[in-house]
Length: 446
Image: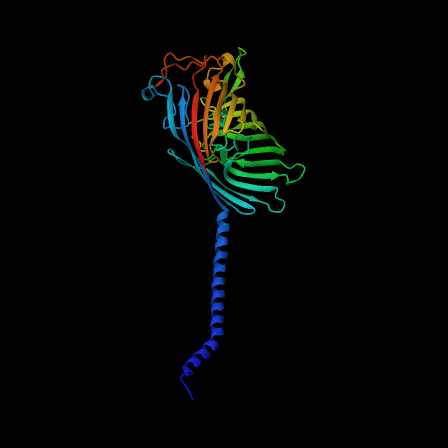
């Protein structure tokens, strides 16, 4: 019997017997690997979905300003003219970062949180810090708590990254410094697709001190009813707003404009209890309209404001701090005011250019006029502005804008005998004072 083929036959037999077992083992191993890969993919998808809920955005505005002798700029360490620093021409320029915003938001189905900082060479400031909770069934109500825009008018909520002029109008800068406030707000909106779709009510209570720390235990009410509608190429909206609050009078005297024996209207002081709450009350109406044609988008926006402003003797502005300074800064001058502003914004056909016209008016004290005005704070002003916006891309914009204020010349404000420190001319408000400013701004948005 020949056994020389026996080893070969035995090897072939073993290979034949164990080949299915080896294939089965490889299949099981492959399934385990695929299962592990699927598990890793699922974990990564969960993490990706979480990251998609986190959004980071922002913009940076580099700004160059050229101002006349009596104006102030928004950038630079010193924002006013001084002859020793800026030369004898009477004009001066400043350069800086106007805004450097970074915004982080996290959104879920029925709640979100937002955190926004403003970073410039002057420092870091918190601009937004709030959370919003919405009811998920009817999707018509929500609650916002923290530091956020006051629900008043259109100018406040219109983002600085979109606005076609460098700054908000002077009236809003005076009444609502920092635009934001610390408070809580309820929003009620009509359901999507319903007949009153576009109608929204926002109302809340706020500390009334901007984004600074409050310590006086009072709250102010702000409310706004707004309606916006879009129809074909047209968009329009109207709104009404109200602010009702108080400012503590840290003095024992309050000043109001009254008629005296000579029938002239003058500031008259009256004794009142220390720390009484003086009424701070504003009303506002706003409207906007836009249409898209072959020439581009045409936009018109306008607002009117009036009310009572507790202010200091030499400043019309609202308080930016809640700390009672015990007589140091008494907001004890009650001024009746009114003002308005209008924007005309026109895209230039199929170019990246947008043309802008702006007009604003502020009368900080409607009870005084002509020879009764002896303080420049009570002086009415007209503001004329014009410029253009170049949208190189959706991220990069260039804005050039010139604004020229005109003060009322009908007043009895004393004319100084000599210029104030650092100036080369006297500030004669019985003529038009030079306060124009040109702004050139480059903005990058991400």
